[in-house]
Length: 175
Length: 175
Image (cartoon, rainbow over all chains, first blue to last red; front, side, top):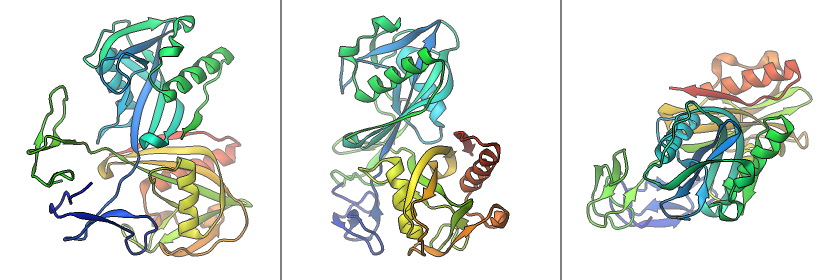
């Protein structure tokens, strides 16, 4: 941020009174503009034991595989965001279940929240952000071509929990 | 947002190509500025069955009671944010435990994440954002003067779970 979104004057990096970190402070109107981590919500959609994954049509990591996930919007819940992303990326309707993983992606300034989900009907397709989408067996997951470490973490925990007949919530931090 | 934080030109509300919602788009450089929900992290700190609560010295809800919580910063985990807020508001060192509640506060454009926590040592005090802090028994909680619905939700679930000998994670949405 170089300019104040409220009044267009330049901002300076300054520690406001009573604060402990430098913030973008407007040199004219004094407004303080905070930067905070952004929330990504997604899910691992399952149908009859197979998992729905998407090959990304957009950067970052175009051509690599992910589960449906994306930035949470104002006015929706994490579960609604996960279901919406699933529809946008794979034209699939899901029923969102238990929380699976919360991953702090520090370098990206993001928190990724992944849920378990079930396809509410077997229909799915290829959304505009995807090159292809497939329902795959555990042994078919393209581990070497997974787009993000948070997605690999969530998928591995999902499968381990499923194998053990439990549904845990797993925290992880990526520096 | 009225002006572009990158180049200071006016922004317009416009649905970008391939998007489905209006965003703040710069009329000069074309930068798209997204607005997303902000994360609040906090905890319910316990010591010998009593809960540490703080009376707010700042708006909103000055004079009302809360558990330690606040905006998550860039570069920290949710657990680190919860521990930091506890230190800032009550000069207390805590060990952060299991996730207790995730509350979507739609009108505030926030997601509140609350954890269980234990005071790592019995010392605590009054941080600059607090008017007073107390360790209180369940029967002493000032239910009519709790600052936020998300905090009341988390406290009630905390106590119900504790009474039942379990540690659940509870979702809630406030319109």
